[in-house]
Amino acid sequence: MQQVYKEGNRIVGKPDPGKSANERFIMVADYTESWVEEYEAEAERLREVFGELLVGIHHIGSTSVPGLAAKPVIDFLVEAADIDRVDELNDRMLKLGYEARGEYGIPSRRFFPKGGNQRSHHVHVFPVGHHRVKDHLLFRDYLRAFPEEARAYEKLKRSLADEFPHDIDGYCDGKDEFIKELNRRAERWAANKAENRAPGEMDEV
Picture 1: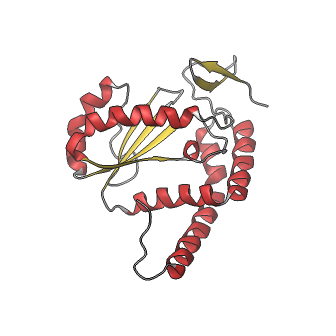
Picture 2: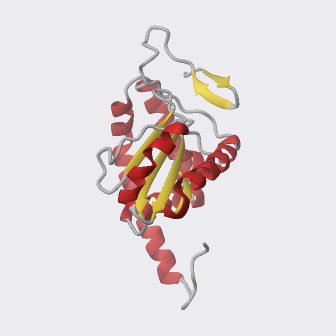
Picture 3: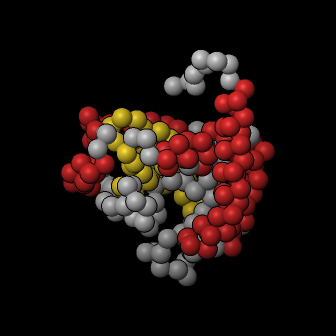
């Protein structure tokens, strides 16, 4: 069973004393409403940094799903008017404590992690209209709409965090098939919602 402690207002993991302090520790914490507060506070800072480039900003990932246990890392999805100009903001993001990682394996993305090996925030920036924007928001909305699916996801994450406390690749690989299946279910859910929508009815914005 993983141990946790508070660092300021944040719930973080208790690293294994036999491991290097520079090694990333994976833990899953109980849901807390402070994640929403952290998101809103940091989102204001990001709006200032991105200025006119920012078209939309969203809370995504497990900390955005009420009641869902998660790694205590706040994920932001930023829609940018011009993805290439985001690189001009690297120095300003650095002043907020973020690292500029470029695409980091995903074409057309800009990725900014914060917190070093004990991550606290991730900022994922995509151009407006990119398919991954829809994918991230759909995954979040599906888990919000179906708590039983969120509970199954939580159970898997807790098990993997116990099994791979210092192996982020093992942790992510263990979730991969489950997430793919959730994505398929979310797509079917979205399609059914669209079919049942009254003519002219719009989604909430």
